[in-house]
Amino acid sequence: MAIPKPDDLGREKTLLALYLLGRKFPYSKFNRRVTLAVALALTAFCYLQWENTPLLSAALRKYAEISLSFCTSILGFLIAGFTVFVTVTKLDIFTTMAKIEFESTGESYLKYNLVQFMLVFSHYIAFLFVCICFALFFQPQGLVSILVDKALSSSNFSWKADLFYKAPVTFVMIVFGAWSIYLVLLLKSFVYNTFQVITTTVRWELELQEKSSTAIVSELASPRGEINP
Image (cartoon, rainbow, N blue to C red; front, side, top):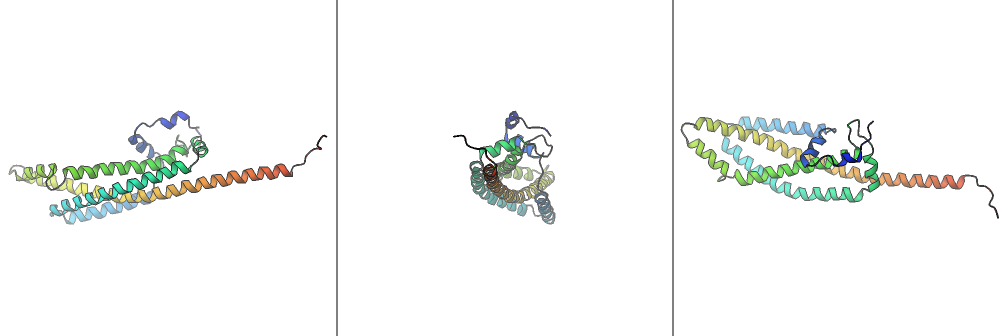
């Protein structure tokens, strides 16, 4: 078992690096299976509505609008939850976790616990960025819509533009919808991780108190020599 070094704590310099680090740790199979099921359902929906591109476009814009308000409100909750994690957990617990390797990954338990929170932040920030891009460029009179209308109006490229328009809309619809569900599932995991951190902190304190009490009882019960006058 490798002992994590203090220099390893600051090895990742960006949020992307933390996201890639998280791929080394176990992930929730339930979250991915549910996301895959939603992606398949959306694929079937897009297939049935393949000829109704305006409906898919309108639905995609509606999803982006709802997701934008949802994501901005949830980010405040996530920051508050992470603040609880940092303030409630004592420094000695952090230092102890930093000295123990997590399941032969070469990384410490401290990084494993922190990265679980960072993964949620990275997903929500990336999703928020995508939603803002939709609000800026994919509205009915936005830049993308104007470019698509000009391409469709051209007689030479109308059929190609129609195909190139339908395929990206369908793809983005599937990815965006499945990603939205995955974010909700990540929120579930975030709440559970926060609960685990708090209960672990309380358990740490209880075990320290029990060890302290046992040491005191053992000291009192041990035989003592005579006291010299």
